[in-house]
Amino acid sequence: MAEKGWHRTVRSADVQAGDIFPANVGPRFILVARLQNGDAVAFAASCPHQGTDLETATLWDNKIRCSRHQYIYDGCTGLNIFPTERFGPDRLWKTKPGYLPTYATEERAGWIWVYQDPRPPPKGYDPKLEIPPEGAEREAPLEPEEDAGPTEQVKVVRVREGADFELRLPINPLPGNEWRVEVVGDLLEIVDEGLRPTDPPKWGVKIHAHEAGEDAVECRFRAPWDVEPSELRRYVVHVIAGAEAD
Image (cartoon, rainbow, N blue to C red; front, side):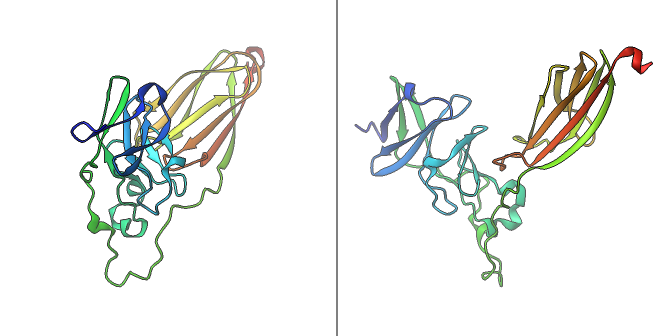
């Protein structure tokens, strides 16, 4: 039963981080989800770009990512993140991301309650930017590029047994751009990694070489709109014993 415009939807305990559940708020069919930070959110059931069913969406970095074109929306405000941040406001008339209507939520008495009216458009949304400029009406809408798979680079590194060394990887400091770094074997160990205050900024990975032999380090880069890594860097590491190095 509605309480001053609020509707009880799904049990709080049933919605774990990353889950998306269908719900009804009065006559509206919406979706309820729990972000990775624990917040419950509610939003429209279809993507504003081309009406794709968002029950197949994924939650990424507390944002909603449509499964069709990987458009990304802020889970709380509905503001479009991708492609807006990548292509800029001058090209919004081609990508036409719109904004994702969202609804206020509260958790009480073990349930997620959703207010029946959507929030106002998010701050920063300007529908005029999605109107084609004069003479451009016949141009085809621009869609995000298809994922062509990661480009791969292989480098060889030689280090002394027992020494530390650091890999420096180029990175855009915008939220969501990340490197996933893994050691393949047992000869190496990652002891520290993070954004280094260089110009331009670099992602630094400090590695300790335990024993002599050959090992490898695999580095996979993923931007917010990438379903799969867009770049793979593999470092083949030759760890030289102290006597051999001398």
